[in-house]
Image 1: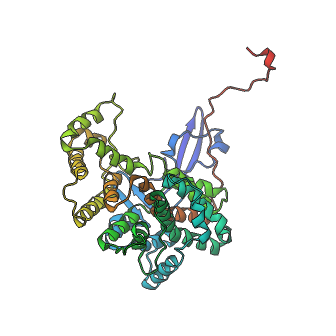
Image 2: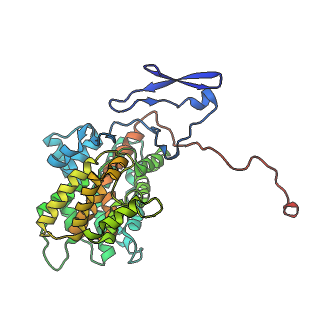
Amino acid sequence: MSDNTAKLTMGDKSWDLKVRPGSIGPDVVDIASLYAQTGCFTYDPGFTSTASCESAITYIDGDEGTLLYRGYPIEQLAEHGDFLESCYLLLYGELPTKAQKDDFVHRVTYHTMIHEQMSRFFTGFRRDAHPMAIMVGTVGALSAFYHDSTDISDPHQRMVASLRMIAKMPTIAAMAYKYHVGQPFVYPRNDLDYASNFLHMCFAVPCEEYKVNPVLARAMDRIFILHADHEQNASTSTVRLAGSSGANPFACIAAGIACLWGPAHGGANEAALNMLSEIGSVDRIPEYIARAKDKNDPFRLMGFGHRVYKNYDPRARIMQKTTHEVLAELGIRDDPLLDVAMELEKIALNDEYFIEKKLYPNIDFYSGITLRALGFPTTMFTVLFALARTVGWIAQWKEMVEDPSQKIGRPRQLYTGAAQRDYLPVSQRR
């Protein structure tokens, strides 16, 4: 491979393919013209070696354990910034000035209410409906209530739709929670910040005053930052693929939520918490470690390892600190699940089996414990993930729509079915 081309040889024929460098990270062999030149496709199940787009939003180095939003390390944003500042960064490419931030926060804050008719929309779901089922339906229905911002060719409508979704997602998520637990909806308040407003809508009740704990609000805000975007994962790719057809932004985000619902994606923190509950106590850990190492045992340790990270997930370190802050603030010092989690982490970081396979604790390992301590049932965990990831989906969708080189998504396949054959009348079939 030369500085800017790669040579592909098949039999006695060779072709030169363009090599494109990124600002950081590995180079990319451009195979856009491969079929036209060679008559062949590439085969890459799961797209593990294929770049589907060009993006300037998020960068991950899985070997080094690095996550950057627009070039800024996630650790710095989570420690020093807040969620709406990160939203602005993901959407517009730069951290806002004070005036820009004040204006952005104001615009998001005054878009938090949803159309009153949507309140009645919720009653169409069974009382025991899963909150994620409600999220998929209600977010998709936004296009029926806000059809004045569905023209994706209009930059102003794209901006309005983006702000609406960032602002209204906490309201919809809180309403899904309230409906799930059988409590009345609580309207948003303009005097509260983004995370505090969400906690208030979730946990306030009409019969008494609810004061948001600033430590818990800060933890919620940090959780939102950590989940805001994560490059071209399954749900983000789903949003981009749906958007490539020209679908309205509300439908695209609903598609992303549906994809996120899968236990291998957004449901991983719930699965990790269920695993810790199954283990139950520290003295049972050796039994489960042995099961995890046994290839013939179907048991798997949830919350360890990552599809991309082959080092310690940088979000996990921040989440671990946040977990301790929340438990200390709430006076939870003897949490059996946390004891199990800490011991499992110690083993994972020192056991040769885990080190060799690079099964480091990921963000899901700690986030489930934190969300449970905040008062959320496990059925809400993926909803909170969707709330936080909305801005990432929107930023990716917006970038895709504004990229003149993007085309409607149309993956190819390796066909292994029957070759062409002729139809026979039913009387002649054997």
